[in-house]
Image 1 (cartoon, rainbow, N blue to C red):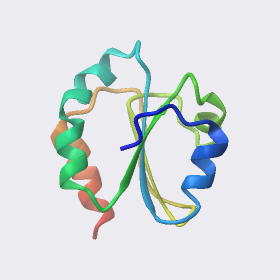
Image 2 (tube, rainbow, N blue to C red):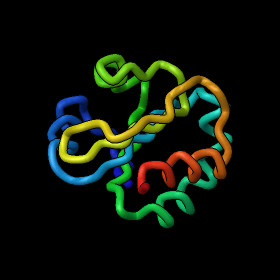
Image 3 (tube, rainbow, N blue to C red):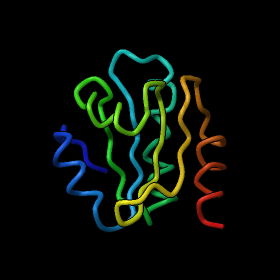
Length: 106
């Protein structure tokens, strides 16, 4: 997973090719803090994705372009095209995130 803060342009360039999962989050978000401890397990289980953490506040332009305002949220991209999204403002459990990721593999 990319841990350094990437610019909107760096994110756009990176997702042009390959399979990516964007994890939209923010430091102040309590529901994001709830899911963050299990993210390493989720990322390891679904390692077919290049995981990119997107700070919704630092990357507001890309968040708006992708229609992501509620966090935590997930957007799957393959070769520049969206393949699925789990976007809303509600807390997500590990099972809910894994269920979403499983639907992308069918």
